[in-house]
Length: 398
Ligand SMILES: [Zn+2]
Image (tube, rainbow, N blue to C red; front, side, top):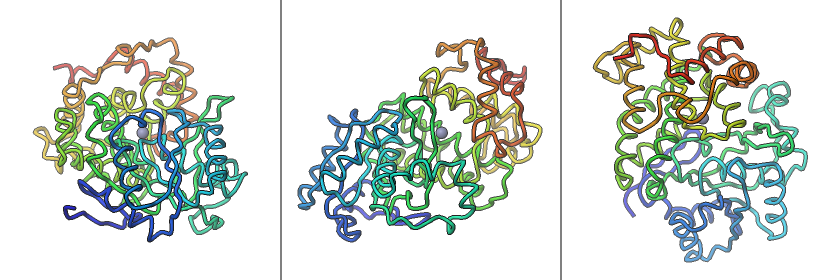
């Protein structure tokens, strides 16, 4: 096996081509005797699952696969996973996939120990009851090892899980410090089969996480620093990873940048996510694609308060025009290079929903106090209309 990078920030991370080979050893060290492998149904016929199964079988580690989950995992998916976990006598979890597999596995870990956990640790309850990580009750959740197969959500380095409440169609964020995986394995070989369009959309999601975290007014210099370097990595690697999916250096760079984004957005997200969440739930569009389209419109709406910070960032990135306009131009050029549409109308959305979108975005967790500046429902409606029609200030028309 080639030399792997090992970091412990904020949890144990192994990174590099072939890092998967460390899995059985970590299972043994963590006393994971019979893990349940959670993945999404789309993974069943793909290379990453075959590699994982062969590895565990060769190491004589008994396991079962649970893949009965939706692309936006629901509370019912989690309940079925808990049944499989308990009936099979499992003691631990391995998550393989994108955000849905990670979030479902986290949900199973929590609900198998605490039946009320999904309600008890819902985000809005948590911030009142447990103001710091040390305030949370210790639950001794089953150990979880996470192996991402996309570079976008960063869920492998998060203490949260996003689950859909089926009856209401709304998303619920669950938070507990023990949801952070015990070990994360960033192996670019597991992402090499990801098609270019999905590589682009998930990569733009990671970019949006970094930019929104960087622009958040919350004081968190450590996360701000992570965001700056994460953006540089994406500038260096995203276009290559899309153009040549077999490029392991680019794939690894994107996996690292995506995981880093989960550390960066401890500082919070902003208006792009506030708009993308309700649009994704109602119109069933890809989260990363929505973010990619919305990003420049929100940057421009925030310009009065982020102008100087973005100029500093543009200088670090060594952009040819190292100021705010140059940064937006780079985002526009990157989107174009990746084949991402310029307007929401190009993916079938129209401005009729503007009032509804404004209200929903205002109520979203990402807009509360972490967008660069306070926006009201009218502001969000206007940003949405601009994004539908592809309207940017004249300076960006060339
Ligand atoms: Zn996102």
